[in-house]
Image (cartoon, rainbow, N blue to C red):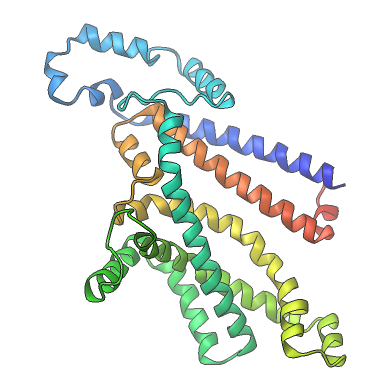
Amino acid sequence: MFANYLAGRIAQLGIVLLLVSVAVFSIMHALPGDPVQLMLSGAESGSVTPERQEQLREEMGLNDPLHVQYGRFLRGAVTADLGTSVRLRQPVLDLILDRLGSTLALSLGGILFAVIIGVTTGVMAALKQGSWIDGFSRVLAYAGVSLPLFWLGLLLILVFAFWLPWFPPAGSAGLRSLVLPSLSLGLLSAGVIARLTRASLLEVLVEDYVRAAWAKGLPRRIVYLRHALRNAFLPVLTILGLQFGAMLAGAVVTETVFSRPGLGRLVVSAILWKDYPLVQGIVLFMATAYVLVNLLVDLLAAWLDPRIRDATPA
Protein backbone atom coordinates (compact mmCIF):
# COMPACT_ATOMS: atom_id res chain seq x y z
CA MET A 1 0.00 0.00 0.00
CA PHE A 2 2.80 2.42 0.85
CA ALA A 3 4.52 1.61 -2.48
CA ASN A 4 1.33 2.50 -4.36
CA TYR A 5 1.03 5.74 -2.43
CA LEU A 6 4.67 6.58 -3.22
CA ALA A 7 4.21 5.86 -6.94
CA GLY A 8 1.14 8.07 -7.09
CA ARG A 9 2.88 10.96 -5.36
CA ILE A 10 5.92 10.69 -7.66
CA ALA A 11 3.64 10.76 -10.72
CA GLN A 12 1.96 13.91 -9.39
CA LEU A 13 5.41 15.44 -8.83
CA GLY A 14 6.35 14.85 -12.48
CA ILE A 15 3.14 16.47 -13.74
CA VAL A 16 3.66 19.52 -11.51
CA LEU A 17 7.23 20.02 -12.71
CA LEU A 18 6.16 19.68 -16.35
CA LEU A 19 3.50 22.36 -15.88
CA VAL A 20 6.02 24.62 -14.11
CA SER A 21 8.47 24.27 -16.99
CA VAL A 22 5.78 25.19 -19.52
CA ALA A 23 4.66 28.18 -17.46
CA VAL A 24 8.10 29.69 -16.89
CA PHE A 25 9.15 29.10 -20.52
CA SER A 26 5.98 30.76 -21.84
CA ILE A 27 6.18 33.74 -19.48
CA MET A 28 9.85 34.46 -20.22
CA HIS A 29 9.30 34.40 -23.97
CA ALA A 30 6.20 36.59 -23.66
CA LEU A 31 8.18 39.40 -22.02
CA PRO A 32 9.21 42.28 -24.31
CA GLY A 33 12.83 42.90 -25.15
CA ASP A 34 15.68 41.19 -26.96
CA PRO A 35 18.14 39.27 -24.76
CA VAL A 36 20.93 39.78 -27.30
CA GLN A 37 20.54 43.56 -27.18
CA LEU A 38 20.37 43.47 -23.40
CA MET A 39 23.51 41.38 -23.30
CA LEU A 40 25.26 43.87 -25.61
CA SER A 41 23.86 46.98 -23.92
CA GLY A 42 27.24 47.86 -22.43
CA ALA A 43 30.12 49.72 -23.98
CA GLU A 44 30.49 47.27 -26.86
CA SER A 45 26.91 47.62 -28.10
CA GLY A 46 27.77 50.44 -30.51
CA SER A 47 30.51 48.43 -32.19
CA VAL A 48 28.44 45.28 -32.77
CA THR A 49 26.90 45.09 -36.23
CA PRO A 50 23.39 43.77 -36.88
CA GLU A 51 25.00 40.79 -38.60
CA ARG A 52 26.90 39.95 -35.42
CA GLN A 53 23.71 40.27 -33.37
CA GLU A 54 21.92 37.91 -35.73
CA GLN A 55 24.84 35.50 -35.44
CA LEU A 56 24.56 35.57 -31.65
CA ARG A 57 20.83 34.85 -31.83
CA GLU A 58 21.57 31.88 -34.07
CA GLU A 59 24.31 30.60 -31.75
CA MET A 60 21.99 30.82 -28.72
CA GLY A 61 19.13 29.16 -30.60
CA LEU A 62 16.81 32.17 -30.26
CA ASN A 63 15.82 31.97 -33.93
CA ASP A 64 14.44 28.45 -33.54
CA PRO A 65 10.68 27.95 -33.18
CA LEU A 66 9.40 28.09 -29.59
CA HIS A 67 8.53 24.41 -29.47
CA VAL A 68 12.08 23.55 -30.56
CA GLN A 69 13.53 25.82 -27.86
CA TYR A 70 11.23 24.30 -25.24
CA GLY A 71 12.12 20.76 -26.30
CA ARG A 72 15.81 21.61 -26.02
CA PHE A 73 15.24 23.13 -22.57
CA LEU A 74 13.23 20.12 -21.41
CA ARG A 75 15.80 17.60 -22.64
CA GLY A 76 18.52 19.53 -20.88
CA ALA A 77 16.52 19.69 -17.65
CA VAL A 78 16.02 15.93 -17.64
CA THR A 79 19.78 15.40 -18.03
CA ALA A 80 20.68 18.13 -15.48
CA ASP A 81 21.97 20.35 -18.29
CA LEU A 82 20.20 23.68 -17.77
CA GLY A 83 22.15 25.48 -20.47
CA THR A 84 24.52 28.43 -20.32
CA SER A 85 23.75 31.88 -18.96
CA VAL A 86 23.35 34.41 -21.77
CA ARG A 87 24.91 37.24 -19.77
CA LEU A 88 27.42 35.51 -17.50
CA ARG A 89 28.49 32.87 -20.06
CA GLN A 90 28.69 30.19 -17.36
CA PRO A 91 26.74 26.93 -16.98
CA VAL A 92 23.44 27.61 -15.25
CA LEU A 93 23.78 24.61 -12.96
CA ASP A 94 27.18 25.86 -11.74
CA LEU A 95 25.72 29.29 -10.98
CA ILE A 96 22.84 27.71 -9.07
CA LEU A 97 25.07 25.44 -7.02
CA ASP A 98 27.38 28.36 -6.25
CA ARG A 99 24.48 30.37 -4.71
CA LEU A 100 22.51 27.43 -3.31
CA GLY A 101 24.32 27.29 0.03
CA SER A 102 23.38 30.85 0.97
CA THR A 103 19.70 30.44 0.07
CA LEU A 104 19.49 27.02 1.74
CA ALA A 105 21.01 28.41 4.96
CA LEU A 106 18.52 31.29 4.88
CA SER A 107 15.52 29.00 4.32
CA LEU A 108 16.57 26.53 7.01
CA GLY A 109 17.17 29.39 9.43
CA GLY A 110 13.73 30.78 8.65
CA ILE A 111 12.08 27.39 9.19
CA LEU A 112 13.95 27.00 12.49
CA PHE A 113 12.74 30.37 13.78
CA ALA A 114 9.21 29.68 12.52
CA VAL A 115 9.00 26.31 14.28
CA ILE A 116 10.52 27.53 17.56
CA ILE A 117 8.38 30.66 17.77
CA GLY A 118 5.23 29.19 16.22
CA VAL A 119 5.07 25.87 18.08
CA THR A 120 6.03 27.43 21.42
CA THR A 121 3.45 30.19 21.09
CA GLY A 122 0.77 27.79 19.83
CA VAL A 123 1.28 25.31 22.68
CA MET A 124 1.19 28.05 25.32
CA ALA A 125 -1.90 29.59 23.71
CA ALA A 126 -3.70 26.24 23.79
CA LEU A 127 -2.74 25.53 27.39
CA LYS A 128 -3.58 29.10 28.47
CA GLN A 129 -6.70 29.56 26.38
CA GLY A 130 -8.17 33.03 26.74
CA SER A 131 -5.01 34.50 28.29
CA TRP A 132 -2.77 37.25 26.95
CA ILE A 133 -0.59 34.57 25.34
CA ASP A 134 -3.61 33.39 23.36
CA GLY A 135 -4.23 36.97 22.26
CA PHE A 136 -0.57 37.38 21.32
CA SER A 137 -0.70 34.27 19.11
CA ARG A 138 -3.69 35.76 17.30
CA VAL A 139 -1.84 39.05 16.74
CA LEU A 140 1.21 37.12 15.54
CA ALA A 141 -0.90 35.24 13.02
CA TYR A 142 -2.49 38.43 11.70
CA ALA A 143 0.90 40.10 11.45
CA GLY A 144 2.37 37.12 9.62
CA VAL A 145 -0.19 37.29 6.81
CA SER A 146 -0.37 41.10 6.67
CA LEU A 147 3.10 42.59 7.04
CA PRO A 148 5.14 43.02 3.83
CA LEU A 149 8.37 41.05 4.00
CA PHE A 150 10.56 43.95 2.87
CA TRP A 151 9.04 46.24 5.55
CA LEU A 152 9.65 43.66 8.28
CA GLY A 153 13.24 43.21 7.11
CA LEU A 154 13.90 46.95 7.15
CA LEU A 155 12.32 47.22 10.62
CA LEU A 156 14.58 44.47 11.97
CA ILE A 157 17.61 46.22 10.48
CA LEU A 158 16.58 49.51 12.07
CA VAL A 159 16.04 48.00 15.53
CA PHE A 160 18.71 45.30 15.80
CA ALA A 161 21.44 46.73 13.56
CA PHE A 162 21.26 50.49 14.22
CA TRP A 163 19.35 51.16 17.46
CA LEU A 164 20.71 48.00 19.09
CA PRO A 165 23.90 47.12 17.16
CA TRP A 166 23.71 43.41 17.88
CA PHE A 167 23.77 42.06 14.33
CA PRO A 168 25.19 43.25 11.00
CA PRO A 169 22.61 44.93 8.74
CA ALA A 170 23.66 43.14 5.56
CA GLY A 171 26.09 40.69 4.02
CA SER A 172 26.73 36.99 4.49
CA ALA A 173 29.80 36.86 6.71
CA GLY A 174 29.22 34.36 9.49
CA LEU A 175 26.21 33.16 11.45
CA ARG A 176 25.46 36.58 12.97
CA SER A 177 24.64 37.96 9.54
CA LEU A 178 22.12 35.14 9.07
CA VAL A 179 20.04 35.96 12.17
CA LEU A 180 18.07 38.99 10.95
CA PRO A 181 17.14 37.68 7.47
CA SER A 182 16.19 34.29 8.92
CA LEU A 183 14.11 35.95 11.63
CA SER A 184 12.29 38.12 9.08
CA LEU A 185 11.39 35.01 7.08
CA GLY A 186 10.50 32.96 10.15
CA LEU A 187 8.18 35.54 11.69
CA LEU A 188 5.93 35.46 8.62
CA SER A 189 5.39 31.72 8.99
CA ALA A 190 5.41 31.61 12.79
CA GLY A 191 1.92 33.05 13.04
CA VAL A 192 0.42 30.39 10.76
CA ILE A 193 2.21 27.62 12.65
CA ALA A 194 1.14 29.06 16.01
CA ARG A 195 -2.56 29.15 15.14
CA LEU A 196 -2.48 25.68 13.59
CA THR A 197 -0.62 24.27 16.61
CA ARG A 198 -3.15 25.85 18.97
CA ALA A 199 -6.17 24.55 17.05
CA SER A 200 -4.71 21.06 16.64
CA LEU A 201 -3.68 20.78 20.30
CA LEU A 202 -7.09 21.94 21.55
CA GLU A 203 -8.72 19.29 19.36
CA VAL A 204 -6.42 16.55 20.66
CA LEU A 205 -6.78 17.49 24.34
CA VAL A 206 -10.46 16.42 24.35
CA GLU A 207 -9.80 13.01 22.77
CA ASP A 208 -10.54 9.88 24.75
CA TYR A 209 -6.93 8.65 24.88
CA VAL A 210 -5.84 11.94 26.47
CA ARG A 211 -8.62 11.66 29.06
CA ALA A 212 -7.56 8.10 29.71
CA ALA A 213 -4.00 9.30 30.29
CA TRP A 214 -5.28 11.81 32.84
CA ALA A 215 -7.38 9.10 34.49
CA LYS A 216 -4.28 6.91 34.89
CA GLY A 217 -2.68 9.66 36.90
CA LEU A 218 0.18 10.26 34.47
CA PRO A 219 2.30 13.37 35.06
CA ARG A 220 1.26 16.53 33.22
CA ARG A 221 4.49 16.54 31.21
CA ILE A 222 3.91 12.98 29.92
CA VAL A 223 0.30 13.69 28.99
CA TYR A 224 1.13 16.86 27.08
CA LEU A 225 4.33 15.76 25.36
CA ARG A 226 3.85 12.06 24.71
CA HIS A 227 0.10 11.83 24.17
CA ALA A 228 -1.22 15.24 23.16
CA LEU A 229 1.52 17.20 21.42
CA ARG A 230 2.89 14.20 19.55
CA ASN A 231 -0.45 13.64 17.81
CA ALA A 232 -1.23 17.33 17.44
CA PHE A 233 2.03 17.97 15.59
CA LEU A 234 1.04 15.96 12.48
CA PRO A 235 -0.94 18.81 10.83
CA VAL A 236 1.91 21.17 11.68
CA LEU A 237 4.37 18.83 9.99
CA THR A 238 2.22 18.85 6.86
CA ILE A 239 2.13 22.63 6.60
CA LEU A 240 5.90 22.92 7.04
CA GLY A 241 6.32 21.81 3.43
CA LEU A 242 4.13 24.69 2.26
CA GLN A 243 5.99 27.11 4.49
CA PHE A 244 9.28 25.98 2.95
CA GLY A 245 7.91 27.11 -0.41
CA ALA A 246 7.09 30.46 1.17
CA MET A 247 10.68 30.64 2.40
CA LEU A 248 12.02 30.11 -1.13
CA ALA A 249 9.70 32.77 -2.52
CA GLY A 250 10.52 35.14 0.32
CA ALA A 251 14.24 34.64 -0.26
CA VAL A 252 13.97 36.82 -3.38
CA VAL A 253 12.94 39.85 -1.28
CA THR A 254 14.99 39.00 1.81
CA GLU A 255 18.25 38.52 -0.07
CA THR A 256 17.70 41.85 -1.79
CA VAL A 257 16.97 43.71 1.47
CA PHE A 258 19.89 42.13 3.35
CA SER A 259 22.28 42.04 0.35
CA ARG A 260 22.83 38.30 0.51
CA PRO A 261 24.29 36.58 -2.58
CA GLY A 262 21.69 33.84 -3.03
CA LEU A 263 19.41 32.45 -5.69
CA GLY A 264 16.84 35.17 -5.04
CA ARG A 265 19.11 38.03 -6.07
CA LEU A 266 20.46 35.96 -8.94
CA VAL A 267 17.02 35.35 -10.43
CA VAL A 268 16.08 39.04 -10.09
CA SER A 269 19.15 40.11 -12.07
CA ALA A 270 18.50 37.33 -14.60
CA ILE A 271 14.93 38.58 -15.14
CA LEU A 272 16.14 42.15 -15.63
CA TRP A 273 18.65 40.97 -18.22
CA LYS A 274 16.11 38.58 -19.75
CA ASP A 275 18.56 35.72 -19.37
CA TYR A 276 16.27 32.90 -20.55
CA PRO A 277 18.40 29.90 -19.54
CA LEU A 278 19.26 31.30 -16.10
CA VAL A 279 15.69 32.28 -15.16
CA GLN A 280 14.25 28.99 -16.40
CA GLY A 281 16.93 26.99 -14.64
CA ILE A 282 16.56 28.76 -11.28
CA VAL A 283 12.76 28.63 -11.27
CA LEU A 284 12.70 24.98 -12.26
CA PHE A 285 15.35 24.16 -9.64
CA MET A 286 13.42 25.98 -6.89
CA ALA A 287 10.15 24.36 -7.96
CA THR A 288 11.82 20.95 -7.87
CA ALA A 289 13.15 21.62 -4.37
CA TYR A 290 9.70 22.77 -3.26
CA VAL A 291 7.82 19.73 -4.55
CA LEU A 292 10.49 17.34 -3.25
CA VAL A 293 10.23 18.82 0.25
CA ASN A 294 6.44 18.51 0.12
CA LEU A 295 6.79 14.94 -1.11
CA LEU A 296 9.08 14.05 1.80
CA VAL A 297 6.69 15.72 4.25
CA ASP A 298 3.70 13.83 2.80
CA LEU A 299 5.58 10.53 2.93
CA LEU A 300 6.64 11.16 6.51
CA ALA A 301 3.06 12.00 7.46
CA ALA A 302 1.78 8.88 5.71
CA TRP A 303 4.38 6.77 7.49
CA LEU A 304 3.44 8.23 10.87
CA ASP A 305 -0.32 7.96 10.24
CA PRO A 306 -1.36 4.96 8.07
CA ARG A 307 -4.86 6.45 7.72
CA ILE A 308 -3.47 9.03 5.29
CA ARG A 309 -2.08 6.57 2.76
CA ASP A 310 -5.01 4.19 3.20
CA ALA A 311 -7.50 6.98 2.46
CA THR A 312 -5.57 8.24 -0.56
CA PRO A 313 -6.19 6.46 -3.87
CA ALA A 314 -3.05 5.25 -5.63
